[in-house]
Image 1 (spheres, rainbow, N blue to C red):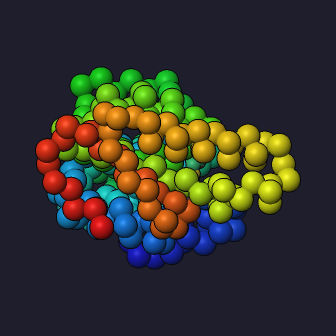
Image 2: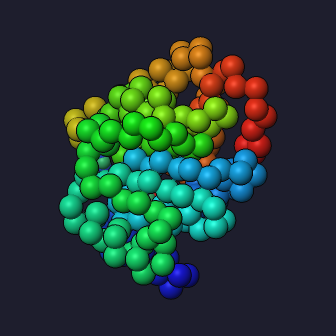
Amino acid sequence: MNEVIKDMERYAEANNVPIIEKDSIKFIRKYIKLNDVKKILELGTAIGYSAVMMASVKDDVEVTTIERDDKRYREAVKNVNACGMDKRIEIVFNDALDVNLAGHKYDLIFIDAAKGQYIKFFEKFENYLNPGGVIITDNLKFHGLVNNKEKIESRNVLGLVNKIEKYIEYLKERDDFVTRFYDIGDGLSVSFRANDEKVKNID
Ligand code: SAH
Ligand code: MG
């Protein structure tokens, strides 16, 4: 399994697949351990790296992860099988906004798919949150470009960065959720329902 993880890191590097940063996955793994997380939903599998890293925290973790890119989906299936994790990681090949998960609830929802659609993802998937559950969002700094817009040369990138800034504002304005922002990796947030009494072990 450690070999497969190293292979995934090398593949991601060689093929420009944006897998999670080391400090960020360390933070999430610790959260899973301290808060007895069992059911995880991930938006954006890529090649399965973060899914495997989350599922391997402890034996009772189950991950459902969604990927819309055919090549990455197939690579993820291969990697999850190679880790012997196919019983605990279900990979769904679809657009996250088209998936129906009726009847399922999750302790942790990890948003790591198209950065321009974060508000849509949040509004769809908050309905799948278990009591006591959290939504963790990755890449809120977008490679350091959020709050450094003068460095941006491409219109597309500027559009995405503006959307991430809108998402951050949106999270701050959602009074029914508490969101904490972390300057870890490429920027993370942890959101949970404000009326949720359960104490969270976050940092
Ligand atoms: N979580 C992965 C990295 C994900 S990269 C890791 O850390 O290892 C983001 C992925 O989200 C890309 O592979 C992209 O194809 C996928 N994606 C983007 N928008 C999506 C959507 N609407 N539905 C499903 N997958 C999406
Ligand atoms: Mg990411």
